[in-house]
Image (cartoon, rainbow, N blue to C red):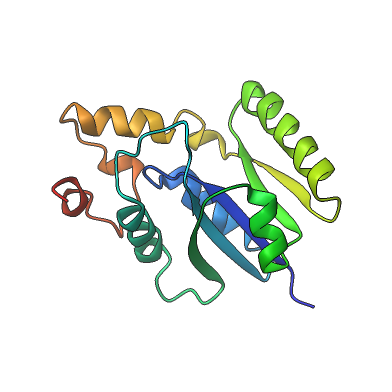
Length: 158
């Protein structure tokens, strides 16, 4: 049986920190579905389609990566797709506290699903989608925080 995991998030945008985490997680799983979720508490800077396209370009030619979209609860998506592992990245202790709570609730909602926490590589700890969005929204150059396979300007005018 293949070990499949979901890496859910809004990925607005997908950063080099996300990319690094997925590459490291590929050592643990046979396949990873990067699932762009609709976060009802956030208004997207980039469209869902643009985010999915950025991720596909980042991992083009990697058959172990699939990109998908979902709305609703992550555990419902897991049930629908028969996925038993959720990957979450941790940058800070505050991330841990939040993600632990979410992971525990997910476990109560679906006992078969395990949350796997991976620590962010130290050099990517300060990078977050929120910071990258702020740089972009204010006309700054954020290319060093985005995969080199992505031309962010292609998405800013969409």
